[in-house]
Length: 415
Image (cartoon, rainbow, N blue to C red; front, side, top):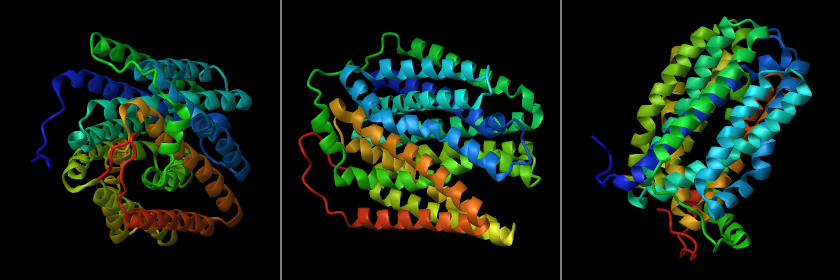
């Protein structure tokens, strides 16, 4: 039974929503596919990584978050002023070209530059996509629609990672260029399908009333930051795992094929849970579901630390599984809350703060985790997990203590 009784999104809004869901899947699948092999592609081998190798891969991988967080607010402003789809489709086309170029070189400087520009395209795609969902979904049904978006977003990532890790185990290192060519093909295919769905569909064409300075003042107010800043610390953790999970698994003898199957199963779980959690956020409120999600993330880091310290055990694995399921509640509730705080004419710019915080979190996480591990080994990882957990706890308490305020003219209140 669906957890909310609100009516579905009107029929005239469904085609743009379907288009953005399909575009999101292909984009994230291509991203996940290539990121799974990126560290090995940079270094030129898939096993036996030393400290210098990890540092080089981390620096080059960090270029994408740098490009994203330094330009995403501008991308959001352009999407608000001139329309969502020109920004989204241009970002997809640029990313496809960049993947194709990356397949032709292993020069570290070239890959760093490509990854930097790729980050710009990634931020533009995400800000515009989230704005489309916020525009087309009624507030009473927005959590469910954001859950569908988050499911497709994460399933694309996970599906790409699963295939990428599988190819990492099957392909010799000198043929990993084929993975980047595959990522380019996925994006090109998604671009074609999206164009087809958008023919004749109503779309947002921008506004001449856009005031960037005023939007920034309202977008960076306390209520918005308390929704978005938890993503900063969450992606400090996720960014590090995304880049080094495949090579780390190989290094300790875990088959990448086994890892691919496990990740693929997780993707199936995402498809089921994200719309359901979004519906619960519509029914019971965004704050409650965000608190459940933050609790799950903290529990997952505690369990991961126990696994690292004591090795694999059934109770800890069970605790990790429960924690991960709870953590999945955060995304759709927080995305809906962020969309609730905006109006159409400023939505993409405000939603861009989500992209800004996750890209900054990935950058800071890569720098912090690799530095701590290089200097302290496993105790450095415990310290990293502890800092991320503490940040989530502090921000969750601050959000729960926030008193409702009268909404400004440019916003609608979050529940």
